Image (cartoon, rainbow, N blue to C red; front, side):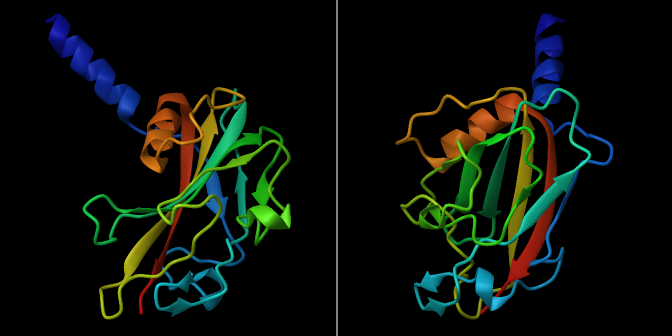
Length: 182
């Protein structure tokens, strides 16, 4: 009986909380549509602008103390997907990231936020670049409402490790999924 209760509690903790109205939108990318060339990577045979899209969120969960934003391609031919952007410690009063905020040198990300290393090996946004001729890849942009002001993660940790920590502190998640193909 105790083990059943444990598994039910663990499953409830792992599930993304449904928060009525928590929504992520963008003026640069549209749900279910191909992303513009501006959000394509520059390298690996791609020649895009490598610019992170503008993202905005609203109707955040009560008790939110900070936000994190991720961009992930579950269709990458790696066996584990591909992390394109991981930024966290976004202050609770922020409701938007401007286009280009994923370039750490541009200084457009909110003060105090951390742009973590992606699967490209560097911090900041790395655009879409699916293999030529492959099916359309899904790019999942998510904003996490968190119950902590700052995530305690090692700067050398993997993006997946940051994702684990995000899931442990999420109050809610809003997602926008766009596509890309070559």
